[in-house]
Amino acid sequence: MKKILIYLLLSLLLINPVRTFADIAEGDMIVTLGENLTNEQKNKLLTEMGAPNDVQIVTVSNQEEHQYLGKYVSKSFIGTKAISSSAITIQAKGSGITVETKNINWVTDEMYVNALITAGVKDAKIYITSPVTVSGTAALTGIIKAYEISADKTIPEEVKQAANQEMVETAKLGESIGDKNAAALIAKVKEEIAKNKPKNDEELQNIIEQAANELNVKLTDEEMKRLMDFFNKLKDLNIDWNQVSDQLNKAKDRISKFLQSEEGQGFLEKIKQFFIWLIDAIKSIFS
Figure 1 (cartoon, one colour):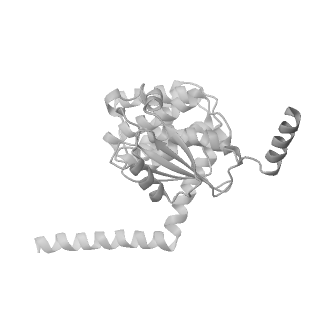
Figure 2 (cartoon, rainbow, N blue to C red; figure 1 turned 90 degrees about the vertical axis):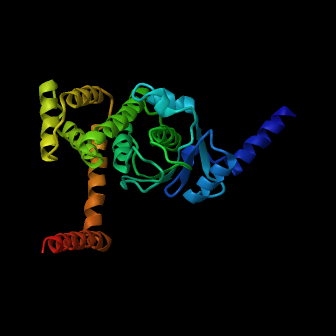
């Protein structure tokens, strides 16, 4: 009797196989939700994300947030509740990473892209949101967790730590040199590390200084020390630097294509017209 039951069960599984995370294909979505969200908040975020009724959901705990961020920001900054959430949509191979955020006030889209590239995430459209305004540091934990499940691969613990440290270091640097400059600086240095693989501190420092000069920003001694420590750790990890370079290039290509597009040209024209109006307004004040 037992043999018959086992046979029937196996037959059913073969006819109607259970869909696992590893079966996820292009266009499919995975959602991460903070475990401290109320049911009402969860439902609102799922609607906001455009999530299908049968969407795969990964829960992120506050304990996990402290695990990956505790070394880099204060406990009070992380807080005691996990509420930031995200939607990860699998894209076609070679698409690269895109990020859009809502109610995130410290970590920028570009900072997420950089950190996710370091973690080995690729070819995904990511939407990060929260029912209230938050710093955004905790979101990375959920995204990496969901990506591991969707890609059916394990990202090494030290690489996850490095990605979280990169996000925090970039956000801190952004407070003094500007968000865009900070994200661009980190991306430029990673690109040079991927190309030239510095052999010692002198070569690494030259790369950082050159990137800073190109962006016309000045780093303090403390900022230089923190960046040296971080990038020394990064270059010694088992990271696929070819993939890092490839994903960074795709990110740059998207910006270039946008600026060349009709939408991008319209955006640039609006900026141009604004400055023409501003100059005329200033002239009128003194005339």
